[in-house]
Image (cartoon, rainbow, N blue to C red; front, side, top):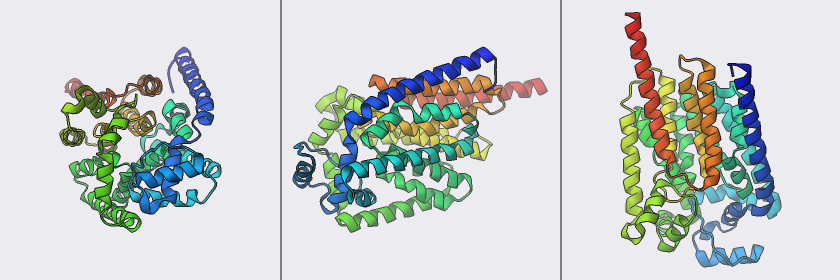
Length: 384
């Protein structure tokens, strides 16, 4: 970062303070949670043929840990195949191995995103992102947000290198969490990247067939039955961390159908992406980064289930905001707001209130584009 010595020292001290706080929180959380969410993935690796059988899964959980509660497996069957090798290990060993894989995926993600946006020049960003509350919770619970972030980074990186079909196929693996993936082909189509759309569709079909090998070709019906069950929705929206859709469901109660609302919110997010594609961005790479970042940021809308670890995916939109800020403006005046966004995200993650974030990212996107347009128009007038 450039700028005065006092300003630079202030931001370095603030970054170090946030990192130390989140690291301290992580030291408390990791032993206390004992990989709670990874237990669901671990059982999925053991019960691939009966993933959505509540009675059977509960019995296995009882045998392994003496727990009588039921936590549903909310991912497609193909993800259980990925967990199968881990399920062959003792749970403690498997959890440690999964955390190592996650950390490597995180480092690879930030490397690729940094190369694309030139944010790799600021190691302080990496430090804040990796040690944020979202990242610590991902590690503590054994969640898969690191893996999803790597899928985003590698898919966009391939698109950035004009490997559109491969990039689309890579991004289809976001179907590990379907609500994260559903807006990606919309963004690709809005940019008229038809080869990437073809790659995404081919990847999705391949994952469907792979899932069918595990659970039969009718598995989507069983999956939809699970995620739309009233008891499942009741558990999900009762969580303190909730998305905009989750908040609306909680406010409306039984007066609204969660599935209908989810579809409506997906439609709204689709309209936002299509509207954003009308902005004239001459730099093709910046356009690619902006549209994919918008799709990922808006993926927080369709699902009522949004927890702190899901915020890790917002690292890509943050990186893109940073790259916007570098377009023709002094570096120091733009790096500070970008890091400020990360700091706010780190603290807001602790406050159990994230329903405003999708709106904020859309507003930031529009505001930056308008600001750049006005600056461009002003420079044009001065030149004349």
